[in-house]
Amino acid sequence: MAQTIQDFYRVAQARGFSRDFMMRVTSIGEDTFNEDDFVYITTKQLPNRSITNQAVPYMGLAFNTPGTVTYPGSEGWNVTFRNDLKGIIRKKLEDWQINKVFDDATSTGDLSTRGVDKVIQLEQLDDKQNVVNTYRLFGVYLQSIGAIEGYDAAGAGTPTTFTAVLAYHYWRHV
Image 1: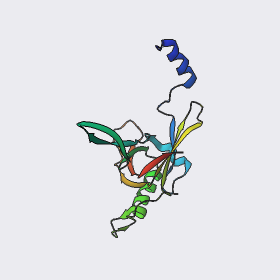
Image 2 (image 1 turned 90 degrees about the horizontal axis):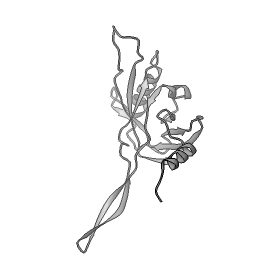
Image 3 (image 1 turned 90 degrees about the vertical axis):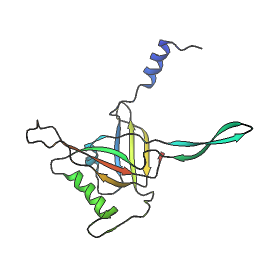
C-alpha cells in the first residue's frame, strides 16, 4: 500500500515532532549540582549505541552476525554551559575534577573505574514539558573543562560559554 500525503499529516498530527529544545539534564555525576545549575546547559545530545558486526565466512559467503555492544562517543560527551556571572557552575566542575578525579598539585586522585552511582540523567520532553523518555549514562566522570569563550573588551554583552567533556561507560533507557 502506498503512503499518501494525507497519511503523513495524519501521523504527524497524532505523534508530533521532537524539537531541539525538548531535552533537559537533571543530574551529572556528583551531588554538588542542583536543579538551578542545569538551566545553564545549552547543548546536549542523546547518546549513541551500536552493535559491532561479526562476519562469519561459510562456503565463500560472509554471513553478518551481531557481536558486542559499543557506545560511540562515551569517551567524550560534549556539553556547553552558559557561564553564570559569578562562575558558580565552572567552579563546581573545576572542584569536581580536582577533588574527585585528579589533583595535579598532589598527584593524587580517584583513578578507579566509576561505578553505577555516578550518573548523568537526561529527560526527553513533550510539547507540554512532560517527561516522555529518561536516559541514564553510567560511570560518568569529568574529562575536561574548556576555555571560557567570548570575552572581548569591545564586546556587545553577549553571554559567555564554556564546554565540558564528560566520559561514561554505558547508558540505559529507563
